[in-house]
Amino acid sequence: MKLLKLIANLGYGSRKQVTALFREGRIADADGEPLYTDDELGVQAAYEAIRVDGEPLDPPQGLLLMLHKPPGYVCSTKDKGRLIYDLLPPRFRLRDPVLSTVGRLDRDTSGLLLLTDDGALLHRIISPKSALSKVYEATLAEPLRGDEAAIFASGTLMLESEQKPLLPAALEVLEPQRARLTLHEGRYHQVRRMFAAMGNHVDALHRVSVGGLALGDLPAGEWRALDDADRVKLLAG
Ligand code: URA
Image 1: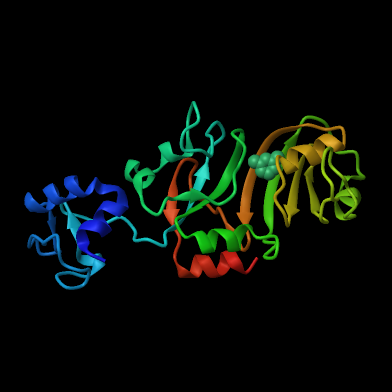
Image 2: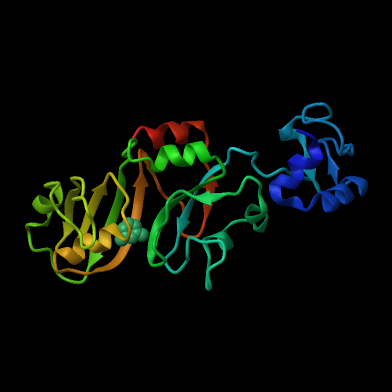
């Protein structure tokens, strides 16, 4: 791919704007030598050696990242209010292919959210065939009754307006009003609806892991690009 298209696709600007960056000598190699628009990647400089205003390029196509979503942010590019894209570099919203969320978390849910521009990977992660685990910690309005774990594990719980019962889910009681729930599917508002079916209410919900990948100590509102080792972990769970 030509450098001009590659850099425009990363969201640095339209082709016209990126052409201007080249003309102004703002796109250079690691030694500060200006690069030319019409060369292919690798002819003048390897991806890692390209600089825009002295800064390395954003991660290339095939980006997978994790965001620690705080409560109050919506998983959308254009809803009203605070959007998860506000927590990423503004250029990321302009990338082509687009950077999409891998599934969604409700506005009031916090925790591990994945984003990628790799459509095949996205489908693999959310595919029912992969049945990747998703682990949530829920803080409840009422103490647990005691029979929830058996009901959630039964594979027979039917949520309102659904045609099929839920897959078995594992509940671990952490405190009388706090529990960890492991799901292998992702239905609309699933955790909140499961506890509502038990006559309870989720006051706070936090996702701690997807597949074998945990949020770890990434602070709320921060993100990090995932590497090959992270991908292996993710898909191994
Ligand atoms: N289940 C929910 O109810 N909400 C989420 O955000 C994720 C899972």
